[in-house]
Amino acid sequence: MTDAPPFAVEPTAIGPQSLIPGVAPISLGDRLAQRAAAPLEPKRQQKPCDLGLFDLHARTQLDLFAPPPLPSGTPDG
Image (cartoon, rainbow, N blue to C red; front, side, top):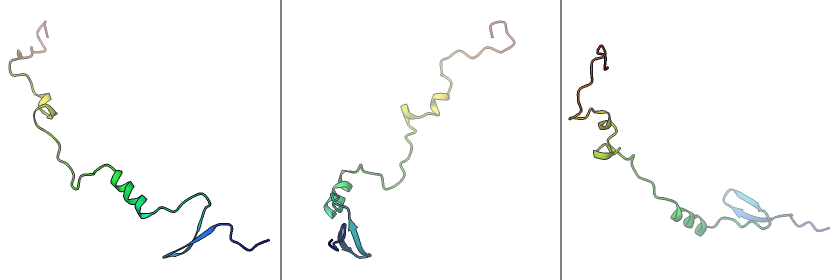
C-alpha cells in the first residue's frame, strides 16, 4: 500500500484543496469567456415606453368619433 492521497491537491489562498479526477479547475480564461458570452444588462432601470402604439393607458380612451352610449333606461340599451 502507498500513502498517496486519493486526489490531487492544489494550493490556494485559503489552503490546500482536493481536485476530483477528471474535473479541471476553472481557469481565468474560462471565467472571462463565460462573462463575454453572457447577455448585456442595463446599468440603470429602463423607463417604460408609454408613447403611441405602446401606451396602454391610451387604449382605454373612448373613440373620438364613436356614437355616445345609450342610457340604460331605454329599450335599446
